[in-house]
Length: 317
Image 1 (tube, one colour):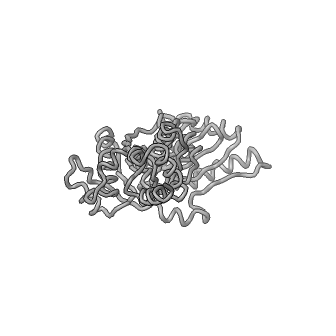
Image 2 (cartoon, one colour):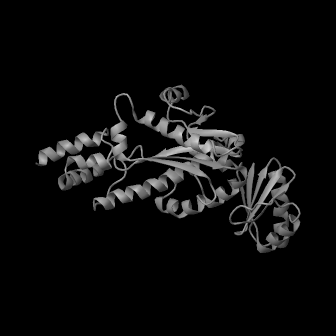
Image 3 (cartoon, rainbow, N blue to C red):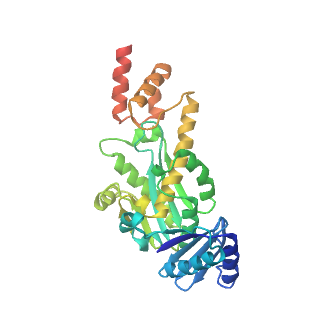
């Protein structure tokens, strides 16, 4: 159970005094302290946000809400209970044992974009860093704007250990064949970053991967690989349920955006993300300017966009 409470400066000082002898030696970024109160972990942030996590979180949060009411009787109290009705459906889908664990998670970005590389990242999130990530607003990269991702990732990577792999378009086009499809490429990349990070981290409870293929299919893709990581928990929409996967998603997106911009600057054109008709229009302009072979360096040639670009270009010529 996680409950957040917005407290005044007066209550902050009371909490600092009360938890003086209960503080943990390490303090999360942007926090005043993190302390243990029986079965509850209490984190007080500089912003005045107090986060209570644990079996007795509601009891401890209620105690401090009463203190807040006593010290500031006219102030409207802001309480966010993660188990209230507004979030009930979401909570039902989240396994708190995994969410609140020390976890390694991986996710990828770029597989649905005609232009740009594929980026796969694995991250490690400890229990102690969960409040920091929640305060930072970490969630699935698809639910954050690119501007927000660019803002928070530099703060994120100072705290969260991670490993990333970038597969360029040229490398992708060399690897892709009837025997090696997109999911096999992804499986190999996921296994590689997980293997590297797993060897650096000793204290983890779960390894979580967003399920893009059934487990038996995933491991079949890896039958010829070395150092296969096997103790994996596969979850659909894992980026919503596990913070290490969410971090992996965000960092992958950050790297993808950087590489995507570089590709555009190298050809002095503004590329378009995704695989829409607008992408085809940009592809035609690239072919007109640099020739068809240029697509091999900046696009995934197995996408249907390639044939569309070729057909429209040949008609125009």
